[in-house]
Amino acid sequence: MSNPTFATSRLSQRTKVTAVIRVTRPMKAIRNAVLALTLTLIGATSMTDPSVAQAQAISPTTTGVMVILTVKAGVTREQVMAVMPAEIRQTVQLYLNGKIREWYSRGDSRGVVLLLDSRDVAEAQAIMEGLPLAKQNLMDHEYIAVGPLCRSACS
Image (cartoon, rainbow, N blue to C red; front, side, top):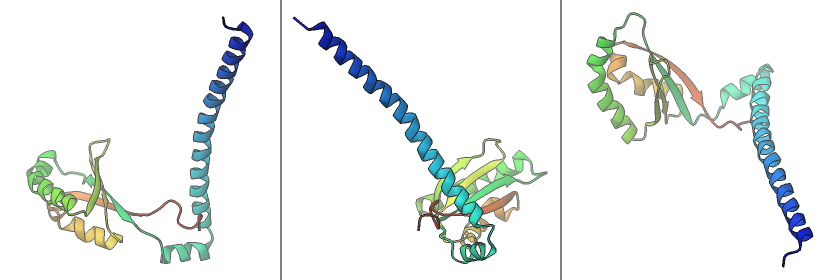
């Protein structure tokens, strides 16, 4: 026979443990989000000090370049589609060669976003200028050097 007091006590402990887990998981997620935001803001606010901004501009750790491609104003879908077979072949080859790490379509359907494995923006520009859409001058390119979130704040 089971002891009702023991069973109630055991149920109560299980309920307490479940309640603690439910509170702890969101707290960990909140803590991680706050930490990431804090590190980002530390980096952003340190850029307002000219000496720090200059030092970071001289020696940033770039691990890739994000390229945002947007169809130029006045360019028709037909113009873009006429070049796409060659563009796709060359883009896939860049991916297979490790130059393109990731690729995404833009949510507004106006172009793509590529993450290139390049040391700097100049190298990324050289890669992109060799593609058919760039040669036909159908796309605008925006280049953003990217690197680890924790560059200076963590050292």
